Length: 108
Image (tube, rainbow, N blue to C red; front, side, top):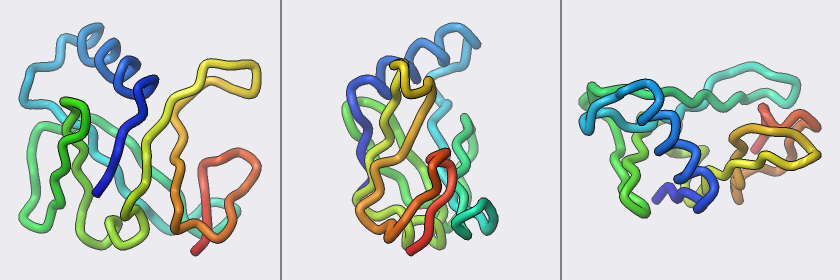
């Protein structure tokens, strides 16, 4: 399962509204090779699912990831912060053995 924090839900709803995206859009989360820790998160809006997609609904937000990425993302929560430590989305990933200080890459 993938989860979404309340702050991330609110921010995603703001973005969808400001960009006039339809109800068919969802949040696509993927993991790619790269970053200073070896693996990087990628977050985007999409409206087309793929055959191997894993689809989750948490708090009324659809979160979609491909099967390979899900192996790294199981039980991860998408969060959002607008505090002094930085503004943006971040991942609370229980599978990450370590992550870099920027929070955009991790290792398992």
